[in-house]
Length: 77
Image 1 (cartoon, one colour):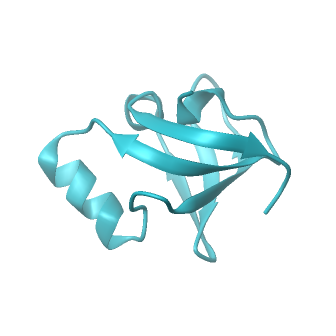
Image 2 (spheres, rainbow, N blue to C red):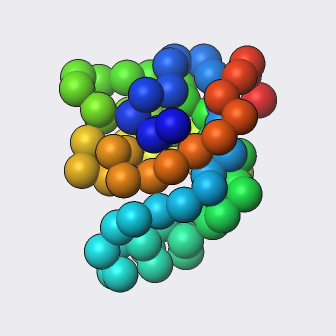
């Protein structure tokens, strides 16, 4: 499942990121690593998400959210 398909209020676990090297390294520096738990706080338009990751909130665009594979979508974390 892709991160862009997760609903508001649900949480999931990052499995794989298929992003350009610099973007992937920046997200990893912010804490989005493999097996990190991510919660979707809000949805702004097509594919744009506000996510909560390790206590911080980030806005991620469609080009990023459609290239992050997640698992374990469920209730809020």
